[in-house]
Image 1 (cartoon, rainbow, N blue to C red):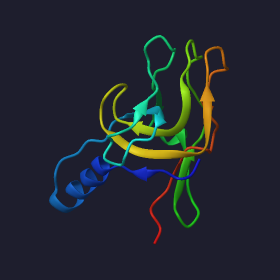
Image 2: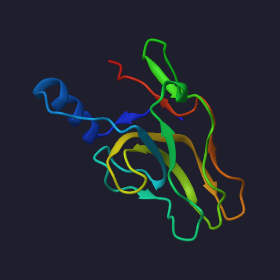
Image 3: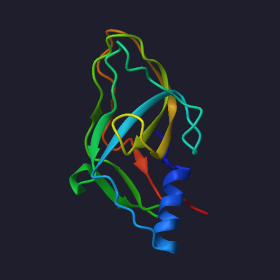
Image 4: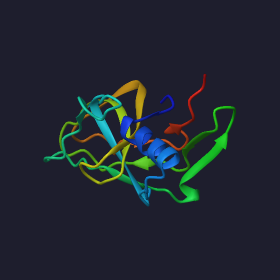
Length: 143
């Protein structure tokens, strides 16, 4: 999985916080969502895996230091410290092409978007899908 991109919402929140002094409290927990059609950085146009009868739901990952490795390298890259395991599929999820980090367990604001290098098809009865430790990467932009 390549490094993620900051969503328009998160980018604007950062700029408003740093340049305008607009108050912002980051969420204490993040939620990882899976997509069969990747959303834009505006958080629109994507198709999240259906939670209706499929066993799918977003999973949580804490902001706590032990949840993330990094920063490392010239890009100051962070990555998930442990496997991120979703529930076992009880219906077909489709072909997963991207993951995103949100500030809520449903709905909410997309913060980061990470397209998959290789799409993964998840069907009813498959093992619980997981993003292996070190594979969800968050890095600063490089010029």
